[in-house]
Image (tube, rainbow, N blue to C red; front, side, top):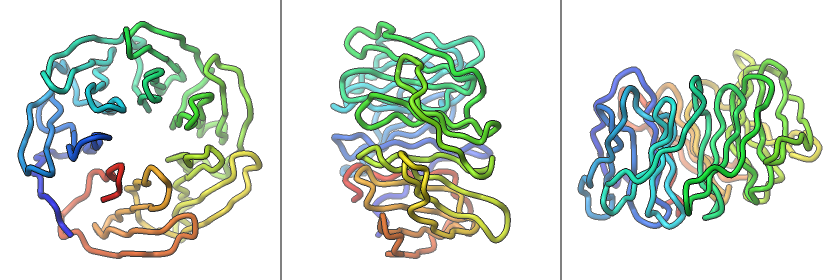
Amino acid sequence: RLLADIPIPRAGFGVRMVFSPVDDVLLHNGTSLRIQQFDLSQREQLGDLTGFELFSPFTISVSPDGSTVVADDVSQFRVWKVDSGEQVSSLDLPPVSGVMAAGFHADEFFFAADLHGNVMLWDPASWGEISRFNYPGLIDAAILFPDGSAIALQDRRQQEIGIFDLQGTRLGTIPIEHENDLLLSISPTGDRFLLHVDYGYPTEGIRIVDVASGETLLDLPLLNFRQFAVSSDWSLLAAVGVQNELRLFRLPEGQLLLAQPLGVARTLGISMSADTA
């Protein structure tokens, strides 16, 4: 059932979306250099978060209590208070960065990982830097473990997912079969990875692997599906294909629950609310 239709007039770029963890508010990198907010319960646009200099953000993160938003802006992160829309801090990034992933771990720290293997942590109470380390190579995906003890960094050139503690010590390595595989998510218990695998026609889809052994637990064929979202409890997988059809699957079995055309010309992004509603 369609709850809201929010115009986002963009062309050529993926739309980054995130739901507030406490309110029915969707944040997205709307037109121009700003983050737009939409209240789904009230069906109204809220205040914009502005201040970007060159590009729309690649990552948008909301604090667990919903009070703070952090988004990347080339060589820095900008930090806003949601209630006032005021920018309250900025966090320095390496000069040539390219943020791949970022987010809060409870109220303990905010982390970011960039294309060049820099992994950085800040304290949300003061926004002082806690630590950083550098992976010696380029990374294509980064996923923080749910308990905040480690981070998984995918290096497609080495065809591996490296697991590191937050001081940069390697804890383990999982080989990946093909360099086109892409790490998307980790289960809430930290024991399974979800990857998009694409070996060319007709082998494309979702794969779930065991973190400890690298064993494949599920192969779910999804030819020409490129947009994915997983519920926070890992019970649902949403996928949208190039024909703009939405499919919902129950995890971990991979049972198809819904297949529904979206009735749009192009899908640039997909996100799922914390309560999966």
